Amino acid sequence: MILGVVLSGGKSTRFGSDKALAEIGGHSLLTRAVDQLSGWCEQVVIVGREEGPAPCIADWPRPGMGPLAGIAAGLHHARDAGFDAVLSCGVDSWGLPAGLPELLSPAPAFLAEQPVIGLWPASAAQAVEDILTGDGRHSMRAFAERIGARAVQAKAAPANINTPEDLAAVRDKSGLQAPKRP
Image 1: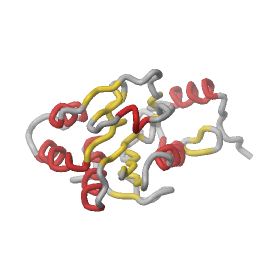
Image 2 (image 1 turned 90 degrees about the horizontal axis):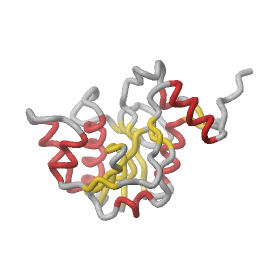
Image 3 (image 1 turned 120 degrees about the vertical axis):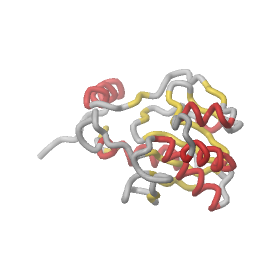
Image 4 (image 1 turned 180 degrees about the vertical axis):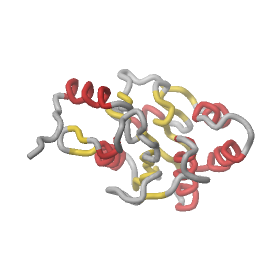
């Protein structure tokens, strides 16, 4: 069983407002990420938010530690709830490849272009915990190296929406517009 994990604990500093709530084609980035993972996973959780369109859990061990703390929270939840693996993506990841779980199987593996998009075994919870409580690098790449994860190339790299300009580019490319204001 796979647990879907949407990482949504960032501060959206470059975006200027809560990018998880930014809309493309009338749907928030958060809702779209949850919906996409729901097609592949038995359950989806959102990490780093207090409310959303799926159950929300806190970063581990605490907020403000970057995406690795979101992965840690997801892996702890997966391990404790009996899931075999976590399929993760950022709330700002747009255009996930079709068949993402198959592309990343067997775990552990991640998209080379965006290491937060990955398939991680629930058994890796201790490794991420060791990294986050240790003195070394607290990065996705350090975690991937520690557990021997493979970097996988996608045919087309997903967009990473960090700024309003990135959002506008995705809207233009997809043909989906911003919501109309009354």
